[in-house]
Length: 196
Image (cartoon, rainbow, N blue to C red; front, side):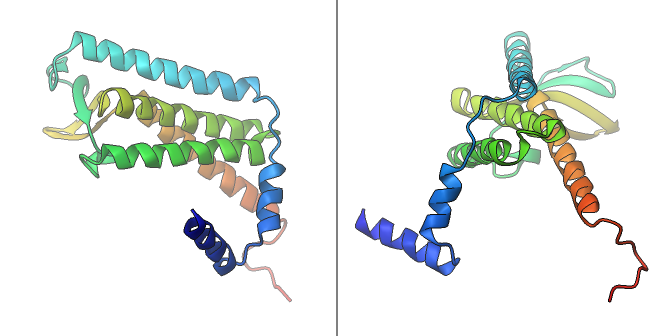
């Protein structure tokens, strides 16, 4: 126990963080009730994701598709890895990474998004998607994917689900928000302006 405390203090010293500023940051988190938008979007994503996955699992056999041909199909597959099938078989590590991501999203919500509806929407989509795939990892041992888009012949986009879509849209909105904030904060500085 004492060794862990010494290691933590050593890390804080290396990164030039003082203990008081860390405690102050933690204690200053405003734990007001989440807004209706954030709560509703997070719940809608989680519920719709879990309902569609349950319907697929109960009504289809693994690796079957409906319809058998076409550009957009429902194909029941299990993914024990992360996005695009990376890190296959590392479910325990991916659960830990998901939990860290969820804590980060919630922290970001309370620190940055309480008065920003656009950022709340982006974070809610991320949180709902993260919870949806985390639930699969914990209760099914793998993520159920079922939306299969054929691009050309046998070439197709990796199967995905509603949680994955929500994560993608949430990340896109977060990037848009970041670009908007950066451009707004740069003021009237334009390319070609002389800077003294």
